[in-house]
Length: 315
Ligand code: XMP
Image (tube, rainbow, N blue to C red; front, side, top):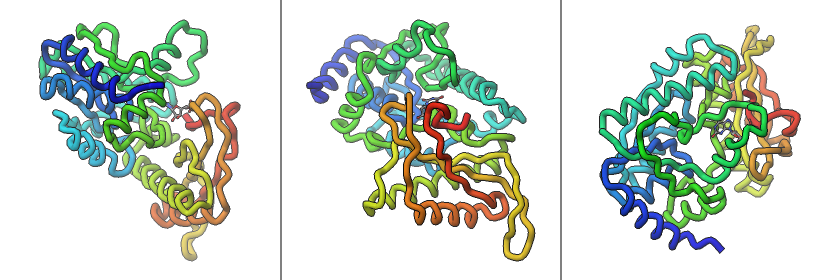
């Protein structure tokens, strides 16, 4: 039986002994990096510099929520607002792997700039066991290059400290609950953010559309689950497709894009089954999306593909 309280105490003590200078950690707001940061903060306090990069590809209100959450745990946080840099770097790239590479590389550049500014000697990372088990051995094909805040370059001259290295996700969630971290049970969100949910040209306007659509899907499915109409899916979101179709707005012909709603049940993301959603819930989602982003979207579809053969995200 995993004893979260003892793990936290021992891990904080170990870091206190080990880290004798300034340390830096990249915080994404996800459960792994948040748990690692909160424990490291218990060990070394303000000598830990937390860096959160707002890529402009985050969910609705997410930056504020992450800032508030990290502040509530007393972390020494710097937020880098980098939306313009990301959109400039991504330009008119639409190929999924290119997008992922550009986003990952820019993240590293921004993080290195911060590391130099604060003069960090140590890098604390929220790496957990599946991260290094899955990346070792090259047994699998790369289906998608995953970008995580953990994926920093090996040639960094920092000493790496990984307090969660031997843990599995459910154990990290136990730690999060013990530490009263709010994101303990939030659904997964991909490192490259809304970029992989915005197929076709990546413009601020189109990312705005998918951000609103994702928020509506989250709200409606969480409300339906709270009312006992359905089980909450493991992951649920929307993606914007560059597929135009003819519709009507009032009496006027419209030529808008398509939003696809995705909701799946899964244990670990490796395989998944699409979720069954009551039709009235789907209808409400559809109406809200087309009303919220008037003109931009005039068709909403539901994805009924399992993984495999599909993946959970569309890119
Ligand atoms: P796919 O789309 O490959 O996704 O079926 C499986 C799970 O992984 C998430 N995902 C990512 N998570 N960095 C992450 O940390 C990434 O680059 C990334 N890409 C996909 C996806 O949301 C799903 O939960």
